Image 1 (cartoon, rainbow, N blue to C red):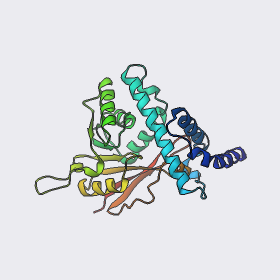
Image 2: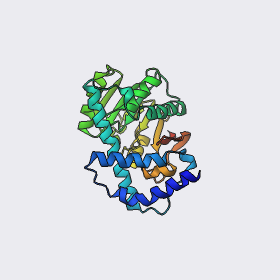
Image 3: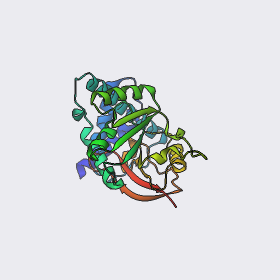
Image 4: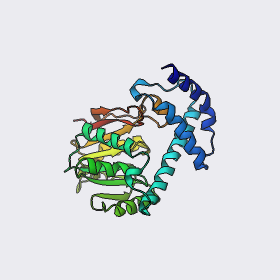
Length: 266
């Protein structure tokens, strides 16, 4: 325990310099992200606390750094899989995301017959792929606001032969069709809606889900807790009025993402 305490104390002193790294250098970003992980992920999120005296500017810069790290990794690995130079299963974060989606399937009771919407799938849709496979065949529809990410992920899904099971549209979650006199809200078509941790603006996305989903739709809202808030913004400032919490899951050691499962309140 003292060794971990010393590591955390040393990392705290490094945070300002890590937050000032040039994000244009993939090697520097990768090294900094792995340095953060090596200390922050040693304990479960529930048994860790973020330093309270780190400035908001430093935290925001660390979020940008870690997002760039994940985005760089996704883009690079997507192209490798498309070019038949790698398998999805050898993606460096595959095991971590496999544990995450297994928790989400259990918490939200996702079934093989479910129709799932995933908001913020990115260029390497590892979560949609795992949700489809681990659930035994749930159909996954993805929204992403980036045309580049959509194009890359479509090519990857086609390369895997999953284009009938996993579909991708360029769309922001907050732009989902509202209900009208002639048609229900767009998200009422789905049994489950998963909101990726990096999907933004999260409050507007959640507000649109509340307006367009059915009362039976389970909403998986990914978030961060404990010292993982140095890697990702949490959802503590998100208003979930209009929803009731029906489940939750937590990041363990060597995991980054926690979450809650919501349903529209009656």
